[in-house]
Image (spheres, rainbow, N blue to C red):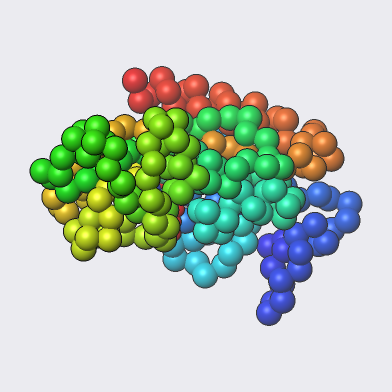
Length: 238
Ligand code: PRT
Ligand code: MG
């Protein structure tokens, strides 16, 4: 496949100067799984499964399109610097990244969930807010949480965590958390409840400005095909 040679990785854009490879950054798990049908509708099928392959650059059924597997929160960075031409990232990740140097032309309407504030069941959130008491909130989404509470005129102490936010109120690290909720099972299992809804979240296609300029003939038809696939998917889900 292009990009990966035995033992050494050749930068994708260096493999063949006459054919420009289009690279798409995806994270393993729900984003990869839910992007797959949309890509298939655009005629792009990865030739390997990232869950079983150790490769980080996957060839696809389209010889000039490769998928690179990166951590969900690293997708915007790869695209921002043009190391990947396109990517798929959750709105949560894009808000934390800030969106600098990225086009966000399409909501793929996948990996849907909500961003919410949650506390231990029985915690008097409304009363605490009303009293103007200082509240400690643990979250991975510091920028989004800061903006949400500032818009409400609330002063909160934000504590940055990198995972398992649900544990923070249980151990007394924080009064509340800001986290993503989809089925609600994780909150329920830890005796937590949603006390405020912040916003709906879904994943977006992001494009590097360089790719849009220099590879427009390749990027534009792909954007159109993915746009049609999103509309078709909407029809199937409703
Ligand atoms: O897991 P890792 O640390 O590697 O990275 P990540 O969590 O950023 O990646 P991943 O693949 O878990 O999530 C990728 C994207 O999926 C996120 O950026 C969101 O946009 C989206 N998404 C959709 C979710 C969820 N639903 C979701 N439920 N991301 C995380 N969750 C977590 C949530 O944080 C909580 O811990 O699932 C738990 C709650 O789920 P329920 O179903 O019990 O409510
Ligand atoms: Mg995760």
